[in-house]
Structure formats: structure tokens, C-alpha cells
Amino acid sequence: MKNIMKASSLAIALSVVMPSLAAEFSFSSNINQDAETLVLLYSQDGKNKQFNRYNKQFNQQLQRTITIANFSGEYGSVAEVIAPHNSNYQRVLVVGTGKKKELDKARSAKLGGNIHARLLSDKVASASVVFEDLSGAVNNAALAANFANGANLRDHRFEKYKQKPSTNTVNYTFDVDNTKKTKKAYKRLANIQAGVFLARDLTSEVATHMTPVDFANAAKELESLGVSVTVLEPKQLQALGMGALEAVGRGSDQGARLVVAHYRGSNAAPIALVGKGITFDSGGYSIKTGASIARMKSDMAGAAAVLGTVKAMALEKADINVVAVMGMAANMVSQFAVAPGDVVRTAEGLSVEILNTDAEGRLVLSDAMWYAREHFKPEIMIDVATLTGSKVRAVGNEYAAVFSKDDELVTQLTFAGKQVNENLWRLPLGYKDALKSDIADLTNTGSHGPGATTAASFLEHFAGDTRWVHIDIAGNALITKGKDELAAGGTGFGVRLLSEWLLNN
Image (cartoon, rainbow, N blue to C red; front, side):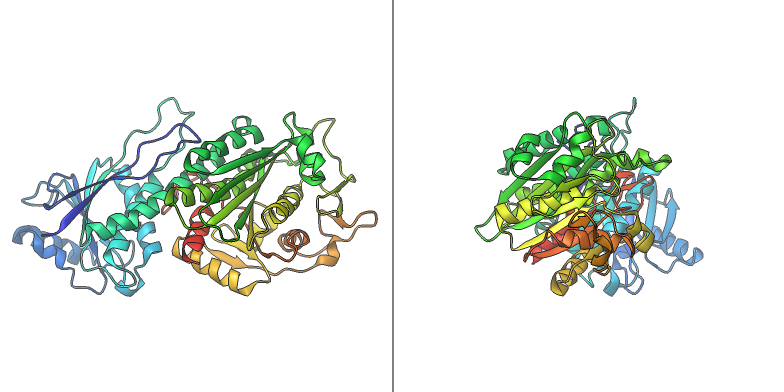
């Protein structure tokens, strides 16, 4: 008789630095007959033997329902039976999983998120999910673990400012072939999930409560996991010659910060993850207009993603040396703020003419990339940033844009993204001539060419000889309506992608 894996969907956390963690597991040798809803996963090309475990009348009712509904098991399709005959279940959902060979971890996680959203909408308190005879692209343990992970990712909500936060959730029982393998697979996903939740909560938090100092304090919470955290303040940035980062933060009363979170899981040369951390982007004197400015609290999502990744690696106790370097600033307007036409000098030594104060992210990243190179000598450096509206116009919100001359790294990262539904699309580097200035070494905006590319080409000046990739996540960081395994609010985009890549390369 099969074991049962039980996962109760996580409770809602109100703290941005202590988000909800993994689901809880318990095991049983009996199928849970007390759940309100039974979820049967139905393969498009399998024998679906799980139907045969129930009594004849129940089985006949299920078969009749899917026949009348012309249910073929197409991926994501659902046939519902209300109050099935001779059963304790209030309803049965027969869920199509598509063809076995196409059911992989990413599709299972997406399915888990969507089924969880449906159960929440129906106010279902408990559900039993049967995994049998589904393995194809991956084994049943991986499918069940990723389904549970998808449900928990969708369940996460940022509601600390609501008078009455949502309290409904779903307790799951997963009927699996091998509880030991499933638990092991889910444990890793739960650690990564904790990093995702940290990144989501940091991104969703309002700008007045997520300043550079607030972010630095959130990073310090990781010290309890063995992460070394260093915070550099404006005077220290000036002493190091980090004039670009310091200048962007000059318009706010707190000024800029450089936050460094280092998890040393091995003695190998580190992997440096560099994050853009603009806690609010007014545009500066090149001020933003329109409703989109309300979303600019998410302009620090790159920094949130790399910090969340470090947390995931620390929880996983991964045999990896990884450091997150995050340039933090609020891009505000004041008598001290930089003005269009000003020239700043980066720690690299290059001077930059600021033609547009709303192209501040690349300035922050330039000094953060220099610091990562100079102080950690990384084997590989990856920067993550909500950098350009041009990226959104180029590839939309379903993909992040990736830039690099390193074909191997682009291939690895693109493959990793496909495993976790965080897809990348490669765009070219080029148009460096568009960054020429009459009075400085560079301008911070291109005179011509696609904006996402000229921004990436600007950053390339600060990569040195280090293997480097730039990932532009503009449009991926915040959503207004939940879908698949993503809840409304900050998405934590990049944590799963980077974690998958780090753990498998």
C-alpha cells in the first residue's frame, strides 16, 4: 500500500524579513478519505490506473463524467464531480496533465499553482492529490514535490496592510510512490521557496518602509544562517571612489548603501550576483509621470532576487561560494540630487555624463560590479536588474532578457530558467558608440540603438575580464493578478532561476 505525503499550505507572514517557509509533511499508509476534495491527475496517454482503486460505482461515475465532458486529459483541463456517489468527498477534480513525456517539473509546478488557486476560490480546506502512473519526463517524486511547491508559491500573499488579511488556505495530502524521495526533493524546493518569499516580500513592501537602510537590516537577518553581511555607508563609498552609486542616493536623506551578503559554502572562487537596488525610483530630475510611478517600489527587485538566492543557498547548505553585492539607493529629487548634465566618476575610473537621471540603475550597478570584481575576484559575475522599459517592449513580461558574450553561460542559464518557469530570451550586446560623450568617458544613455542593449553595453565596461551575464527583469518583478505559481505582488523572479543554475552547474 502506498505512503501518503501530507503538506499543509504555509501560514501568512507579516514580516518582510521572516516570510513563510516550507509546507509541513506527515506520512501515512492509508489514503486520506477525510479530505473535502479529491484531486486525480489524469494523463492524456496513460492508463490512469488510479481510478481502479475506488469502488465500482464511484469509478463508473468518474468515467461517465469525463466521457460526457469530452475530457481527454489535455494539460490544465479540469472535469469536476460534485458530491460523488458513495464517497466522503464533497467533490472530485479530474485534472489533465497532458502527455507523460511532456510533464516535467516546470509544468507540474504551474499545475499545482493553478489547482491551488481554484481550491482557494472554492474555499476548500483540505484536498487529497493522487500521483500514480504519471512519470515520464521526470519521476513521480519530482512531479509531486514540484506540484506542492507550485501550490505553496501561489499561496504566498503580502497582506500586512490589510485590516483583514486572508486566512483561508488548503491542507494537502499527496499520495506518492516514494515518500523518502519526495520529501528529499521537496526539502530543496522549500529552501529555494524561502528565498523566493524573502525576495517577494522585499519587493512588495512600500517604499517608505523599504529604504536602503531597511533593506540592509533585512540582509543582516541572514547572519543567523551563516551569511556574512557588510554594509557600506555614503562616506565609505566616497572613500572608495564609488561616485556613481553615491551620486544616485544623494537626493535622499539616507543616501546610498552597498550591501554585501556572502555565503561561503566552499573554498572555490566565488560566484558574484550583483543586484540593482533602487528602493524607489522617482526618475530624479528626469521625473517619471503617469500611473506607472506607483510601481517603482519594485525597482529594487534585482537586489531582492540575489539576496533571496543567497538565503536559499544558505538554507540548502550548498557546497557553493556565492556573494550578493547590492547597490542600494532611493532615486529622489532634492537640492542635493544630481542634475542632468552632471558628471560623476565611477570606481572603475571612468567618468559618466548623466544625460538622464532616470537611467540611474546602470550607475548603481557599475560601482557594485567593480566592488564584486575587486574584492572577491569571482569566477563568474551575474547582474540582475529591473533596468529598462526597452526590454519590456522587446520581449514583454513572459521573458527576462539576457545579455552576454559567453555562449556557455547563456545556454546554462536559459536551460535553468526553463526548469522553473523563469524564461530568458537572449538580446544582443552592441551600439557602444552610442555611449560617447563630448566631456566624459561615457554617457549614461545611448544616443541611438535599442535601449536595453545600450544599457547592457554600458555595464559591459565594468565587467573587466570576468565571465559576465546581465539579466534585465523589467516587467517580471511585480504582477497585479496571480497566475500559475505566481501570487499577485512581487514575484521573486530570479531566485529560482539562479538557484537552479547554481545547484546544477
